[in-house]
Amino acid sequence: MRIIFKYILLLSLFVLPAFFSEVYGQLVNIESKRMQTDSLRFVFTGDLLFNYTKNNSEYVLQIGSNITAQFKSKNLKKIYFLIGDYTLVQSQTQDFQNSWFLHARYNQQLSSLLRLEAFIQNQNNTKLTVTQRNLIGAGIRLKLISKEYWTLYFGNSYMYEIETIASTQETFYNHRNSSYASLNRSFEKLNLIVAGTLYFQPLYNNIGDHRILVQCKANVPLSEKISLSALYNYFYTNFSSELLSDRSANINIGCTLKI
Image 1: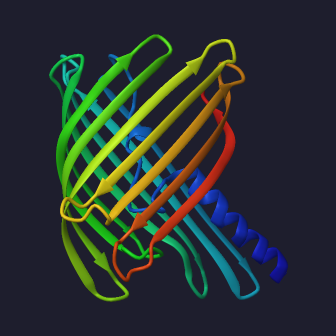
Image 2: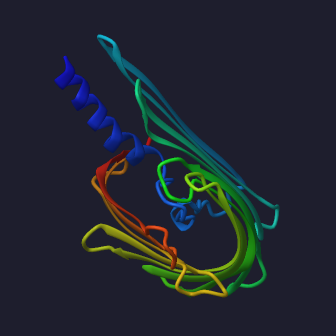
Image 3: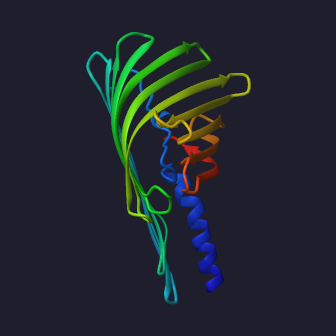
């Protein structure tokens, strides 16, 4: 029974994060969560997972939830966007993952090229060096290329962040820059859609203290309702101090069903 229990726990650690969120790092790819809904003014999606397994005196508890909501103004030039995630994987003796993420964003289109954005964010992950991060920011978003088969976005924002390290009881108040480039490309002959995003977030007064996130996603529709997808994430934080750097990488492969 202990062997079965270990397999269940191992499967939980891989499967649950894959289905719900990217909260394993302090830098979350908002680009991958944007909703391209054209003229649809209100959209809401939500997921909820609860699982409890007990063998003899040992148990595994899994809780996962995700909500995404978007509202557009009548002229479709203003967008209000909300994301919420919570993930818990717990045994009788320890938490293997315990994290949440909340993000609210306002987007104002000024022209076909330029958009202004403002956002607030709260996140917590007990398994990382920086256990809690709160931030507020604002900046620009440029739609540099918009073709039939590919689009390219670039964004740059100022962020004021408050970070807490639970192990040392330290709190840091930082002024940080956030830049990203996001490329989406479709290959009609191959029936393939590829998206890539690169984030770079250094401190204004110390570029050596920075975060990098690279995400690549490929999607192959097998039919009108079923598609095969592969996702790669790499997250890196360099604190430019005595603190150990955070690194995280994962690969997810699966199927998506649309009804």
